[in-house]
Image (cartoon, rainbow, N blue to C red; front, side):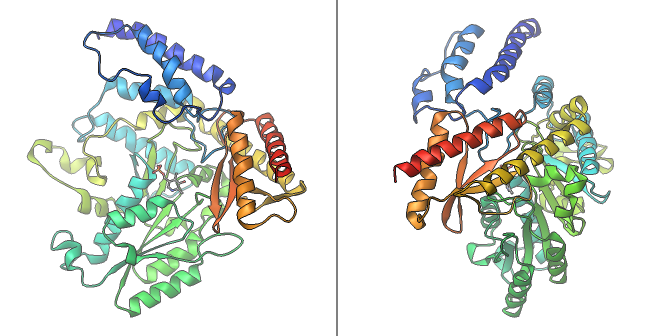
Length: 479
Ligand SMILES: *Cc1c(COP(=O)(O)O)cnc(C)c1O
C-alpha cells in the first residue's frame, strides 16, 4: 500500500472510528458472543489475493464490534475506567504512522526525548519532585516485575547472590517481599517471576475499615524475618487497591522499610491519576520516600492502553540490572543520552509517548482535572444514594471513584447472599444497559461500581442505579 492509497483508506477508517464512538452508547455494553463465535465467523486462513477495504470494514461491523465489550461505553462501570480518549488515539495513529524503531537513542532520538519530556510533564502534574525519572512501559505488571528485579539485586549487590555472580542460587539469605492481600495479582506474579518464591512472599494483614496495609504488622514481620536470617528486600505498597481503592500508608511503610534497607515500590496503577488533583494528594502522603512508582495513564486519565508510567529515583539501579551493550547498538552518543532499553525488559519499543503527548496537548491538564473531579463527585453522589437506600450497603470506604456495594434482603447471609449478589449483577450485565463486575471481599461476593469512563455523566449513573434497584428487587422476589 502506497501513501495515496493509505490516505484514502485511512480517511475511511477514521470515519469508521468516529462513527463507532458516536454510536457506542447505543450498543450492549457487554459482548453477547459465545466462545469461539468470533473465530468461527472468520476464514481459517489468510487470503492469497488482496481484498478491498470494504470487505474488512464489513467484517468489523459484522464480527468484531459484536465481539467487543465496549470499554468506551458511558455505562461501563466494570473493572476500572479503561479510557482511550480520542486525542490519545490520534497520538497512537502517529506512533504507528511514523513507525519509529525505538531500540536506542540514535535509532529515533525524538522517541527517547519526547518520552523524557512527557514523563516529566506527568511528574509535575502529579506534584512529584524532580528526583523522579520516568519511562513508559506497557503496564503496571511489567513495572512491578522490573522494580522487584532491581530490588532483588540491590539486596544482594556485592555478594555471591548478585546476578553478576551466581545469582539467586547463591543468595546468602532468603530474600523476602511484602505486600497486602489486597494487592493486585500482578504483584504475586512479579515476585514469583523474579525468583523470590511463594514461601518468601508475605501477606501483611490489613486494617479495617480502611483495608490498608497495617504498618505495625509489616514491621513485626520484617523483624521476625530478619531474626530468622532472612533479608527483607522489597515492599509493594498499593495506592488504590484493585477491589476497593484502599490506600496503604506509604509514609509509615517507607519508614519501616528503610530501617531494613528494603525497596519500596508504590503500585498506583489505577489511582495515580488522582495525584493530578491537589485535594487527593494526601492519599499519597509519603510517596516521595519510595524507590519506585507506577501509574497507568491508560486507565482513568484517558491515554490509549499500554501507556504505563514507571518512575524511579535512581535510573542507575535499573541500568545496572537491565543494561546490555551489544556492538550493533553502540553509538558515539551513548555517554550523553538515555537508553530506555536499559530501563526495562524489551529492546524494541513503540513511540508510546505520542499518545500521552497528544492527550495532554489537545485536551490540556485543566479539562482532564475537571473530568476527574466530575467522576469523584458523581461517585460520592451515588454513594450517598446507596447508603440511604433500604437494603443497600456500602461494604468499603469510598476514597475515590469506586463503590463496593451489596444488596441484602432481610435475613439473607452467607452463600445465599452470594447467590443473590451474583444473580442481580448478572441481571444488570445481561440487559446490556450497563456493565458491573463482582469481586470477592473477605471471601464473599460484592459488586463494584467503577465510575470514571470518559463519557459517563450523572444521567448514566442515575440510570445504572435504577437498573441495580430493579434487578435486585426482581432477584429478591425469586428467593
Ligand atoms: C490495573 C492494575 C494493575 C495492572 O496493571 P496492568 O497495566 O494491566 O499491568 C496493577 N495494580 C493495580 C492497583 C491496578 O489497578
